[in-house]
Image (cartoon, rainbow, N blue to C red; front, side, top):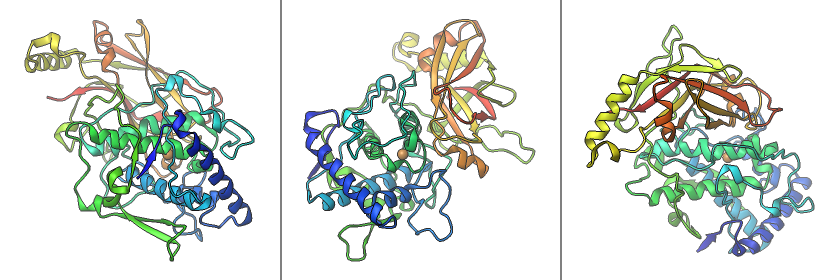
Length: 441
Ligand SMILES: [Cu+2]
């Protein structure tokens, strides 16, 4: 069975060398014929075009078909990695080859592996403006349900959905924006880092499944959906894969060298779902669909803003005290057992007029505008400009529970400020409301 290995390990060295050779052959194919389905450029167009728009008239049917913002995000990308692997295997005559995965530990020390920095290597891609900065840790948060982790339920495939799962927001979007250049656009597979990045995301899905009570959806609308990709060996030149056949790595016929959950993989029951607007354009209250996604509002700004403004959220501390005592009653040893109160900052219905995923902004929170300023998260608007142009928005949820004791003291208010990660970022994210939530009873 094929085994995918961590890119930073000695064991992955041969796989990296074969990867470089495969990329060289595929780039060469595209130079000869840009429309060769097994070529480097065509493969990136299957994912999308530079602005992440829908497929243009006259373009091949499999262009712009990547799945984001829904529960098809994980299986579609798994299929595309599998098919990409087959192309490299056939192109290099290495049927045992497996793609390495990027084992970035956390955002503060994400580095691009050396093999991808050598300008004479096919693994190099010009235009990356990678400049390490303070960032929210690019590691995923667990969620009890698959839709909260992997993306919202949709009857049909959707190129750019609006319900991003926690693993798509972070680390997926974050690392796309951090590398920048082609990686920040929907043509990100032009950069060989794309495939080791998505391999990391693919592995997180499998790690998530090893956690207690984590299960894939059992609905036919998910399991029975299929996608078709160019294939180097099929007589038709194409291969169709069903979600059912790739729902675990064992089912798909490969493995990972190891599957240890990161420390941050603790359960957080939230869903990054945009809120609805009623006919007057007012935000309707959250309408939770499932018990485990219920949140209780603690306070919110009275209007929207942009990342240029500072936002102040008044906090209803009674609701908080109530929640605290309920949690204390549930714990076997009372109050000292409950740990920090679950606390989430949500930026609701975020849009951006221009820019790609590298238009990143750090989000900071501060108690009463006085105490210490803390990094709550990072906005990495991958594909958001295209979505915004069509009236779509995304809601970003940041877990700030570890700050709950300090932030919800006597101050009674929370100040939210923003700072660009890359100073030359194009576009300024805006939002309808900044709100603070705890979990509901
Ligand atoms: Cu991606």
